[in-house]
Length: 167
Image (tube, rainbow, N blue to C red; front, side, top):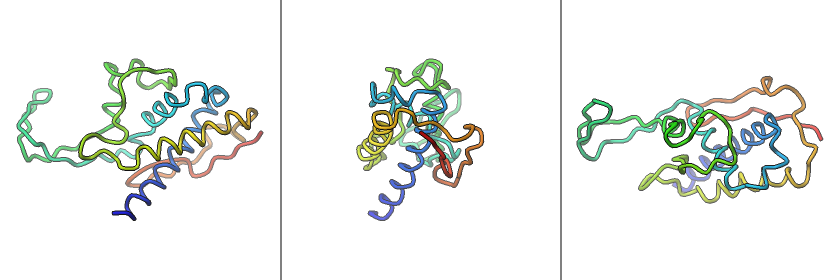
């Protein structure tokens, strides 16, 4: 269990951090990221979730009807977190990166019994890494076009293979 938490935490945090820095640099928002750091971290994580397209398998606990489809207790359900994160009823203009967003909390780290044990550490890591360059390297910028950044996608997570910057 410990090995799983450490390895999953490392990969997810690494990808979230590099994707966050890429997004903030691409959108010219790194310098202001520390002003609303908590909200910026949540927005970055919301948009980063679901990058691999892998659904989370769960089993229905009770009978329910969802969008006209009957799901019985015990049925396998494949949950797509990014669908919740892109719901315009909870996130107006859901595809846009809006660090000032104050809408619904995301499900990035799951919920209930499946809530990620490493969520507080992951938030802390992302905040530390995107907050420091904003304060200490105000001239930080991408060394090339954002479109040229290669992404690594595996069955669990996705993130930039490398992020070349200058300052």
